[in-house]
Image (cartoon, rainbow, N blue to C red):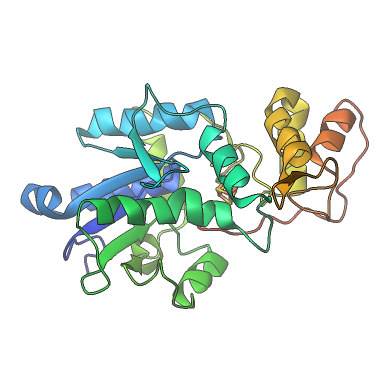
Length: 288
Ligand code: SF4
């Protein structure tokens, strides 16, 4: 069975990671040039907090495979998004910061509005601006979730109906095809180019937003320990977030079950293990 077959207008939501790039390659491999040009849109939603190597990788995939990848970013205006490219893409967290300032609070493990607003919703708005998706004729949205990520798969399959889920029918061809991290690793080992970020057990530690609060605490801390400047933006968001339009000063956190980003910066040159009991990564839509 061809799990990658395009059956109508389809968006490949490309995270800029190895797994979703593998999925994209499989879609290109398993469809005719005619169907690809008729049906396929490939979209990368940039939060502004992606590692520079991720942006390079997205560009390399487009160049090597001779495809168009549409780069979108959140904007706090009527349109709600901007189309950018490798040259003009934000690199200092600007779209993410604009969203936090609009919402006036920080996303957290329970209310992960960043993944919805910075990625899913702007794709929706972009498609609507082109007249491409409606509730009556939803697009297929392919997302790069593997068979060995059962919690992510279950979460998407059991997702309640939302305003976003009405316009897109979620598809997880990798999960359906039984693709695991080993398949993805072997594929990239045989390619002439790769995402230039290290992996541990198939996980790209610095994929997606560099210090995403859903990453395991030790993962976050080890990234800060290797380059504490990466945490400055996160610490600034925690110190500058406003509540109800008023500056709240100290006290806002991306999560309260671990130290603030400023504390992690302060402790980053010690050997102190702050995270002995809190090291689980939480799955989200952003994907690998
Ligand atoms: S990677 Fe993390 S911080 Fe970035 S948008 Fe996704 S959930 Fe939010």
